[in-house]
Amino acid sequence: MLKKTTIAFCFSLLAALSAPVFAENSQDFGDYVVHFNALNTTYLPPSTTREYDIRRSKNRGMVNITVLSKTLGTAGKPVAAQVGAVASNLTGQKRTIDLREIHEGPAIYYIGDFPITNEETLRFRVNVTPEGQKDTYEVNFKQQFFTE
Image 1 (cartoon, helix red, strand yellow):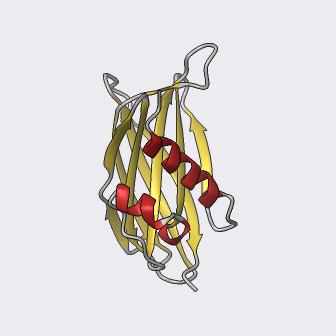
Image 2 (cartoon, rainbow, N blue to C red):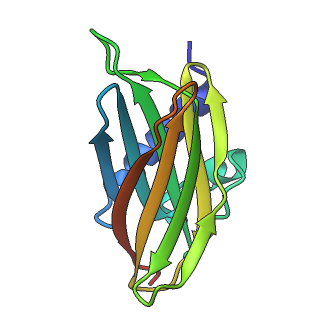
């Protein structure tokens, strides 16, 4: 059974993802699917940001990465992975994003927050190596953030 905090976090993310200023995507890599999204932390409820030690501010963004192993008859099984993320703005300034692995019941995901400015577009490069695998998968996406 999922903990109440897991359910609250998932609902918080879903609520945040209904806003027009997010990126929510997935990329298929054969046996694995990597889900990723980025959003402004002000879209998360204060209780959620406290629970997960996320800095809630109009000038903070958050990235969330989940790696699923394809399993017949299911939506996928969460797997642990080595996950790294770097964001760069349109002028090429890079930010390494420190990601934390979160385990709650069967769920495994990686979150990290970072500074943002109004109307800033960030290009994300996420490298994922599922546990026990040699191959590293690269996900690239971009997201524009609004702080006002």
